[in-house]
Length: 424
Ligand code: GLA
Image (cartoon, rainbow, N blue to C red):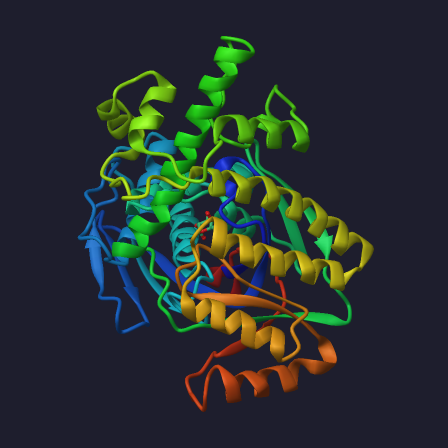
């Protein structure tokens, strides 16, 4: 299973707006065989991941937050529910990895997919016949919510459907991929900030703030459109404004955003008044345990990020098709600024790493993935990669000897099987 790096289009997927990632040539490998005692046993070559076991039931209780086996349980439960299996077959599985963990390269979704593919085999189901890759990607995107992170569908889609030597623009609901050529004389380099980007604990809460506030954005937009245009309008995700039956243009969406979000900050009281419901109802339906910041919620900036990031993804697609790395790099730089300033998902180390990378010759540099740590993705002229890495060693990494500081990456084919019984 390859990992993935997102080239552009951050925090757009759960809004139904496109992303533009590629698989990377660092992988998770899982080896599995059926067992006859009806228990799933999972182990990892990573000493930090303790071996665990659980019954393959339709409803599987979660292990404590942060336990890695939750990703395996997520896969098995999703598949059992999809195929209406009450109690599935046992399996022993070992996972190994060349993909740095907590680096924002989707090692957790790669584990989910590895477990899913192995378990499907044990269940006697064939990928492509009993379930298509797209169906499995959508199923596991939803299934991974089991671990408590309300992610979108980018990671599962690219890991299962990515193509060798290509990036993909991915659209959602329904899932569609368009394969795009990479640049010939520029390469993508991933740089690890070494700020852990675990999707558990506090990072999980910070990530979930995105989907929670975006659902609130959608509810406010729907209310406005129902009051001013037509009572029948429904907006389940912000992306429905462009891509649903409304088909608004960017200009129309921009005007709508200025009507609905006239101020940079909005209080819970004002949101409740706008939606004509009580503050308790806003809290219960959308915010749950998300507290109101003293200055209010910054909804306008989130909306602005979505509008512009969507435009950037479309332009980045064109830049790949036209073979225009300069344009692509400019879009990456603008995306980082928007993620940091409008969407609030950067951190000082990522900002420093991005500035250092630009100073060392990257023509585009930005955080990649959920943010709050993890890695940056950098577009570097092929003949400058060596001096780029050396320069970062002397400025950002300051003599650090940890492995995997910078990875020159290329894309490989999506997840697959090697049948060891055939090899033998
Ligand atoms: C994580 C999630 C993805 C996506 C990115 C941000 O990687 O798993 O679905 O939301 O963050 O773009």
